[in-house]
Image (cartoon, rainbow, N blue to C red):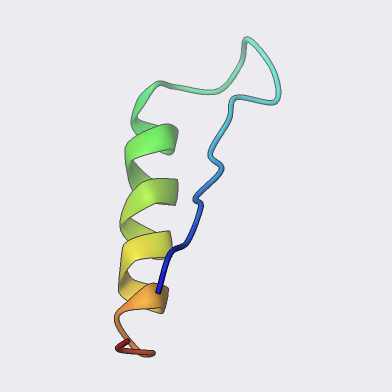
Length: 35
């Protein structure tokens, strides 16, 4: 199975760590559905 993750900044007020948190959440979600 292939998947695409999309994480982004929505404004200059967000910290770069928010991208890491978004990717972590996406990976945790995807692991619930093993291929």
